[in-house]
Structures are given as structure tokens and as C-alpha cells.
View 1 (cartoon, helix red, strand yellow):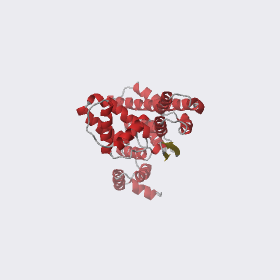
View 2 (tube, one colour; view 1 turned 180 degrees about the vertical axis):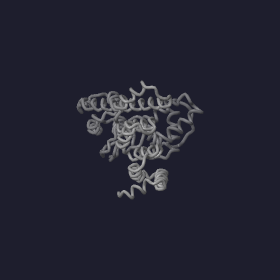
View 3 (cartoon, one colour; view 1 turned 45 degrees about the vertical axis):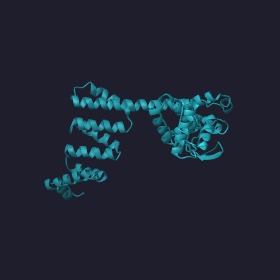
View 4 (cartoon, one colour; view 1 turned 120 degrees about the vertical axis):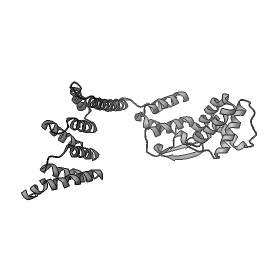
Length: 318
């Protein structure tokens, strides 16, 4: 840039236009353009604090945290600009970069200084955020170490478990999202007879995000599924509409058998998932209500639908 250009751009009229242009770029969220224009501007002029803060925010929007840290430190060392603004952007950028330990060390010194109450509250929030992130990282590392160190159960050993033991084991690894048992579950799903255990395995594989296709035989069907794409239990026909409508019907007429009804419906759902029943919602709701009332010898309208009653009975008992 020639000396004439420098003189022009530092002239009050050109400086005023530069400032207007910068504000327009910021207001229109043109962060890339703002960053480039600001760099040009500060080579020739001392930018006002508001333009500096816009620059910091533009850099944060673009994920350029290193530049925020570098420029904020430079301004702090030079003693220019608002101390609190420079420090705030510095700490925010360090948090975004994952420099949690540095943030805690840095802010520990600040908390011992005499600073305005509002700024002290901000520092406390930053420290809390850094601690939360640090604890979360440590928890993930511990989980990873446990998964790596834990030996998966042998297939032959697992197959000796009772059904209750099989379900308890799957429930535990599902809750803890232990991916180390993924291969075991994929192998044994076609070696267990219990449809409820197969459903528990489906849920485990979905929870850990298994996106590898698997072929499973359930009832008379051969299912080709991707576990991660399976529906939630509450999004199935039985787990959603049917269960809800049966519970509403019983709440007003027979609340004493609601718990029994819920247990029965969930049992059938666990037996068939992810297969959907071959009946519409109305037939299923009436069928379950009739079946449950008959179980406890309570009167209920004759629905004249032996097909759905037989289907419920089969999937409740097997």
C-alpha cells in the first residue's frame, strides 16, 4: 500500500466511511468480510472498543478461537481497551478451544483480585463451565478405559444363564452403553430362543448406535435390520397408541387392573418387537381389554374377534 493510500484511509472522512462499512458488515452477519476489513482498518487506525468487540464476535462465530486469544492477550499486555471485555473474550475462546485447566488456573488468580461484582459473577460462570467440561471429559475417559479393560463374556458362558440372568445382564450393559459386548450380542441373538431376550438385544444395539445390518429370525419372519434405525418402543403401535388407549379406558372403569394390563401389554410388545401386529389400533385395544377382563373374571362386552384374542394369547405365552 502506497503512502498516499495510507494517508487517504487514515483521513477522518475515509476513517468514518471505514467504520460505517464495518458496522454494516457486522449487522449483516458477513463475518468473513468483517474480519478482513477490520485487519485493514487497524493497520492504519486505532479501532474503537465496539469495533474490537465486533471483531472478537466475528472470530468466535467463525471458530477462529486462536486469533481471539492472541489478540485479547495482546490488548491486555498493552493495557488498551476495556479490561473486562478483553478478558471475557479471552476466557470464552479458551473454553471453546478446550483449554479447561488453563481457564481454571487463570480465573483462580482473578477471583483473588478486587473486581466488580458483575464481572466476578461472569468469572464464576466460566469456572463452572470449565469444571463441567473437565469432569465430562474425565468421565468419558474412565468409561473408555473400563470398556477397553473389561473382558466381554464368552458366548458359551452367556448361553448357560437363565432367562432372568440374560435379561439382567443386557439391562446393565444397555444402561452403561458398554460397547465391548457388541459382538457377543450380535452372535447370541440368533442362538437364544426367547423373543424377549432378542428384543432386549435389539434395544442394546440401538442404544450403542450399532449401524451394521444384522439378520435375525423372530417368530416366523426373517428380519433384515439396522439396529440404530429401529423405532423406540413407545413409537411402536402397541407401545404408543394401544397402550395409551387401554390405560385410559381402564382408568375410568377398572383402575385396579391397570398395572396388570400394562404388564401384559408390555410383555406382548417385548415378544414381537420390532414386528408390528397385523391388526388396526381399534381391534388391538378392544382385544386387550377383552383379554384382560377375562383373565380376572370381570364382565366385558363380547367383541366377537377371536382372531385378535388368539394372537394376544399366543404372543403373551410364548
